[in-house]
Structure formats: structure tokens, C-alpha cells
Length: 125
Image 1 (tube, helix red, strand yellow):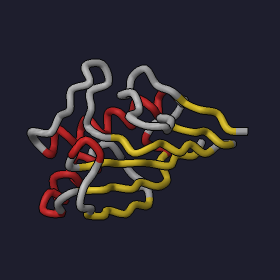
Image 2 (cartoon, one colour):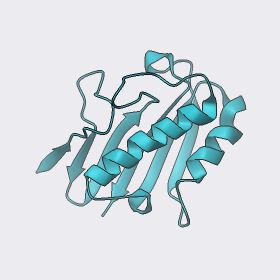
Image 3 (tube, helix red, strand yellow):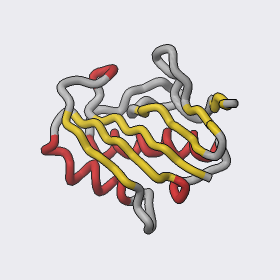
Image 4 (tube, one colour):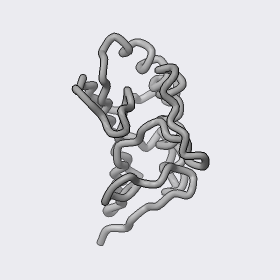
């Protein structure tokens, strides 16, 4: 049995997908972009601010599922330009204290809503 996780503290999905799906003790969070959950505003002016909003959206979904970043075991980062890698990595890393999750970072040609970064995670209770 899977449980759909919908967060009032994350931006509404822009397609036929859920914020997250909980299957057993594993939470699969869909890719998040820098859309403010309450205003719908896209934050694209600064890659650090953009990444921070992405991570805040993930944090809110984790919290609504009864988890936090210590539960994250795997992350996938999709970026438009690897020249921003160090700045994205700095912000991303600030959300973890130790026992960092497995991760890949991939440069892509385009992302939804023309954002610069999208991140998805898998977390386990």
C-alpha cells in the first residue's frame, strides 16, 4: 500500500504527480523547484536563493511526512549549468550535518518552468 503525501507548505504540483509517495518506510519526494509555496513566485534571480527555496520545499514535505534531512538517503540534483555547482553544493550541504546521502548531479538542457535547479530525494524512516 502506498500513501500519497500532499503538503500545504510546498508549491502545488504542475502536472500529474504527487509531492511525495510513502511506501512502507521509504519516502520518494518528487523533484522540487524554487517556487514559493504560498505566493507561487519563482525565485530565479540568484542560484543560491533558488537552491535555498528548493531545499525549503523539500524540508517542508519531509516534515509533513514526519521526517527531516537526517532521513534522506539519496538525492538527485539536476542543473542547467555546472558553473553553478559550487554555489548549489554550498546551499545543499548546509541542510545536512553528517552522514551525507548518496547523490548524483547532472547537467541537463532544460528544466520545468525554465528553472536552473531541480532536486528530488528519497528518505527512509
